Every structure is written in C-alpha cells, then in structure tokens.
Length: 95
Image (cartoon, rainbow, N blue to C red):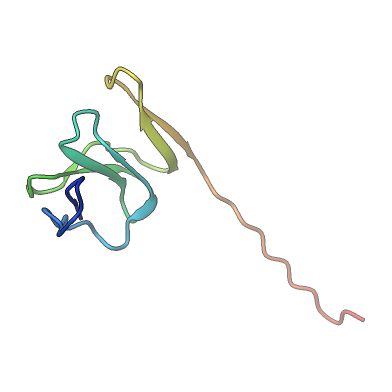
C-alpha cells in the first residue's frame, strides 16, 4: 500500500503476487514503480504505482536472484545471483 507522508488512509493498494520474495523490494529511482523478485526467485518485475499491469524487467534463466539494487545514477541494475544447495544426511543406528 502507498500511504500519504502526513498519515491517514492509503492512497493506493498495489496488487503484488503474495508469493514474491518480499525482503528484496525497491522503488524505481523515479518513484513510479515498485520492483520485486518473482516467486521463482529468478526475475525482477516492476509494479507501477498508478495501478498498471506488472512488467517483467529481466529474462534470466537458471540462478536465483538474492539481492538487487539500482546504481546511484539510476541507469544500471546490479544483481547478486547464484544457486542454493543443501545436503541431507541420514544417520541410522546411532548410539
């Protein structure tokens, strides 16, 4: 939701997929959209504040996006990407 700086009721309610990676959201440098990582952790989407449809900004395959941010001049988008691996070990007859 977007709230007025002075407080009060929200002025906008954005419809963002509830399965998105919520800890990695950023405003665009012009403040007109909210960027977020999709529910597959693979691409960045832009949700315009004016209520338009979300737009996919990246078309990446494979690795997950862990973090992202704009450069200070707002011209570049930096990504931290990689793969998460986990090992499972089964221990039997442990005494």
